[in-house]
Image 1 (cartoon, rainbow, N blue to C red):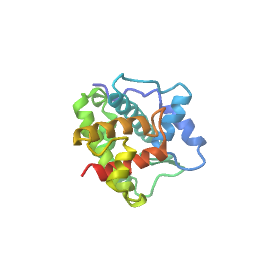
Image 2 (image 1 turned 90 degrees about the vertical axis):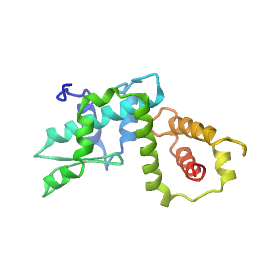
Image 3 (image 1 turned 45 degrees about the horizontal axis):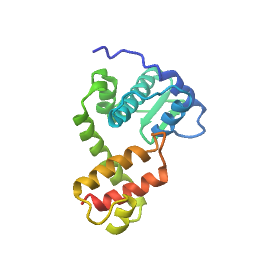
Image 4 (image 1 turned 120 degrees about the vertical axis):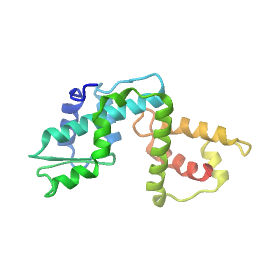
Length: 195
């Protein structure tokens, strides 16, 4: 697989990042690209579509990071994308911190992975995401968590997992139907119900 394919999102992303008054987040960049008709649906399967969109964005950001060196530094983190006029003093350390992730997203063979692999990755991502935001949210009880999930007290673990996936895909800020506040509430409910 040719890993030197130039991603068509590189230049629109650079324009968005340069125009930003502060750091960007990956879902904000995705939303802006969608508004401009530059990031269309990539797969009928919602999980694959989300994965492929994220892959294209991260691939473009890492390609851009390499292109801007050594004159500028593009910090690439999902929740903190920022362009700096000068690279960090120890650029090798900064690059090493994200080398595995950068290598993954620059390898186009991963763009077409199967649904099972995507499910494992999404589950891992959501678990890490919940650990990151859990200090910022108040824990709710099981009855309220089920209410957020629109399920009754007789819901099985399988129904809870299925509802979580449906809500996460529907409410995630990267999606056209996204709602950050409802998404955070669903994350809080999932923390209670997944146990």
